[in-house]
Image 1: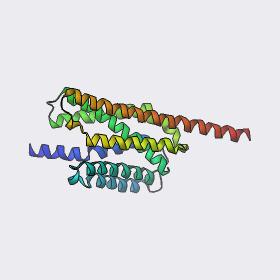
Image 2: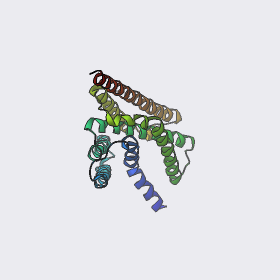
Image 3: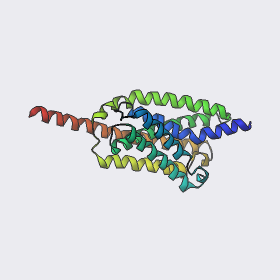
Image 4: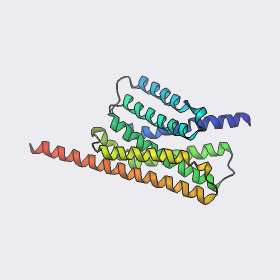
Length: 228
């Protein structure tokens, strides 16, 4: 039993960073890779894992917990910038997409946990992995693949990108200061999860606006070049 609990604790410690790396990879896999990509990738994964472990003992304090999540978010964004031929703006844009997808998946499997509160630890692990797999495949097919054209575009709406980052930061703060475990009763937990899903949909909508704006600007530049 002790080993099972220990394994579950290790899983919960690194679950977020692993899910965030994979979800972000959905949105950057189309980009051109920088030289010595395998070495860069390994070093960046180690950096992200280190960021996840950093200050874990202080994570019981809310401020430290929020800072830990911000540190992991920035580490993944820097990893995208280091490994792929994109600017920092695009790197953060992609990590916002990855974080939103990860957050959306986590809210879905917590809904299942509400319906089956007596699940053992290994059951929670299996269900969370299954839900993450389904949500990530759906996100790749419906969102990430369609945004693959952005590898040749530059996100120019700084104000909207900053707004996405601010909303993501607010989501981090809210989900850490008012955690799922703090909600008492089924209705409170459901309301908490629904708010999280609503924020995810809002960020998706904002990013869709950025994507459409990038396409329009690209078409305008193409027409202007053609007209000349």
